[in-house]
Image (cartoon, helix red, strand yellow):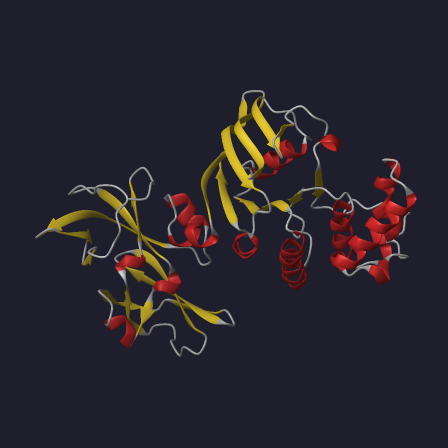
Amino acid sequence: MSSVTITDLSLSFGSIEVLKSLNLDVQEGEFVVLLGPSGCGKSTLLNCIAGLLDVSAGQIFINGANVTWDEPKDRGIGMVFQSYALYPQMTVEKNLSFGLKVAGLPKQEVQERVARAAEILQIEPLLKRKPAALSGGQRQRVAIGRALVRDVNVFLFDEPLSNLDAKLRTDLRVELKRLHQRLGNTMIYVTHDQIEALTLADRIAIMKDGLIQQLDTPHGIYNNPTNRFVAGFIGSPGMNFLEGTLEQQTGQWHFVMPDLRIPLNDYAFKQTPQAGQFVEIGIRPEHMLIGDTALQQAVHFSVETELVEPMGADTVLWTNVVGNNLTIRTDSESSVKTGDKLVVGFNPARASLFAQNGERL
């Protein structure tokens, strides 16, 4: 059952199109993350769903009701912003209860909702404190609690963790995942952080220039990117790209570039390939193998290490093949040093091919 449905949604500011006939269907209880670079329209889309912006065209449905022109308070949503937006003169308890009291809810119900939210978010010991006496992570929990007390079916999050340090982001990310598992509410979450998207989402909508480029599970986005933009945007370090052409020999397709020929017998083509066609092949750094295991792959060649980046849990090697940068993610125990000659290899079935227009081949 659909919880949030967006059909042909467009939004323009003068001559500038921010959202372009966008469609999105979020199922009940689903955690969908809107991911993309700055200016792609993800926060604008969230604000349209919340009713904070008037759309130029299209419709928005929440739980089957057309809310395109409804006020934010009438849409049945709870929203958590990037800034905590807490009332500094009020205690945590009063911050949580203020909106409910203004809405005229009975005192007993207000107390029950505040107690429930405080228990879920583990902020019960903080209820008598004011925001100034709280850490950043505690303030963000209170901001989430203020949305939770509304007891709605749909929660909207606009980059709620971006103001926190790295450890707090990790901790709160885990708490948000647990919160969703416990409540089962529909959640739509905006971020530019791909780690947040991959770890939190049931499905990710990757956006660019006001359009959704791909809507899929984290696994689908990562392993089968629909175009070159998605492939390059997801992954750190980013995917390696090599330019070449397609050739066919004795019924077998090959990717060919100077001094390198890659057999594609295990590659699953989405489109019919053509001989001589310009393509880019993409290989993720973690799919590149070195040493004896590289020699066992269908494709292997020699490179020289130009730079070694220890990353703690693993090590990133920067190399070069036929004038193209090539990064390799390997084990942190690797003893490779700058200047070392390496044999690297990969399985072409794990690669991605992109046509000249950027679409997956």
